[in-house]
Length: 371
Image 1 (spheres, helix red, strand yellow):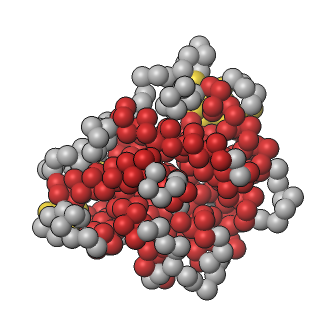
Image 2 (image 1 turned 90 degrees about the vertical axis):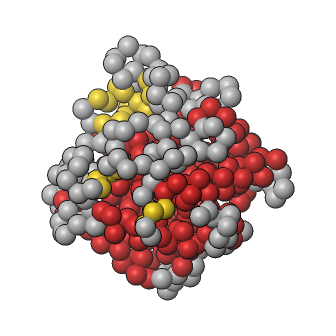
C-alpha cells in the first residue's frame, strides 16, 4: 500500500496524525508516552523539544484540513510543555526554546491568540539576552552552561524565528533583522561548506574544532529554512539558489536517493529528518515550476513517503522506524513518528500544489502558517 496507489496523500497524513495518539497517547500530565510499546526507552523523561514539534505537527494538520480541533490539540500540547516545565517557557537549551517559539508563532498565526505570539516574543528575548555572545564570532550558543559552543541547531531557528517575528510585529519592535543577518552570516562563514553541506557545530570541546563527524539532516533543513526566510525578508534571490544547493547536497550525501539513512537511535535523532522535510517544504513552492531542482526534490519527497507508507503502515496504524526502507518491530520513540507526520504533511502539500493554509477567524501570517 503506497501513496502512489492511493493518490490522496491527505488520508495518510491523517493516519499519521491519528497514529501518534493511538500509539503514544497518555494521561495528563504525561500527554504522550515517550516510546511504543509503553514503558520502553526513557518513560519519565520530559522531552520539551519533541513536544514543541507536536505543536507544529498539529498546526500542519489544521493548515491541511481547516479543522479547528487540531488547533485545540496544538494549544493543549503547548500548555503541557509549560506545565511540565514548572510553569515557565524557558529552559537551559536555546535550540529547545526556539523550537517552541517557532511552534507558538505558527499557532498564533493560525488561531489568532495573542498570548501565543507574546510567548514566542518572550522566548526570543530570553534567548538573545542569555545566549548571544561573541565566542567563535557573534552568534547564539547552544545552551546556558556552554556559552562558547555554537551550532546550527541554535542559530538556524534563531534566523527563522527572528524574521517571522519581524513580519508578525509592528516595525521597530526589536532588531530582529540584525540578529538574523548576523547569525546567518556566521553559519555560512563557519559551518556551511562550498557544496552547501551544513556541519553541526564548533568548539564543543573548547578546542575550536568543527564537529564534521555529525552529519545530520536537520542541520541541512534549518539552513534551508533560514535562507527562505531571508529571501522573504530581503528579496535576495541568491538565497533560494543557496537553499536549493543545500537540498541537493543533503539528498546526495545523506540518502540512498529515496530515503534518508538511519541517523541514530538516541531518540532525538528520530526527529531530524522531519525537520528537513518541513523546511524543504518552505523552499519548494518558490523554485520555478518544472525546474530540475524542483522536479528532483519533489520526486524525492514522493519516493521517500511512498517507502514510509509501504513499510510503516500495519494493522491500520503508521508505526515507522528510523529507516523508512524497511519495517521494524523494535521499540520506537514518538520523535520518529513526528518525522513521519511532517514528511507526509509535506507530501500532501506537494501533491496539492502548495495551497495556502486553510482559513480561520484569527489567521494572520499565511507564510509562517504554511511551514
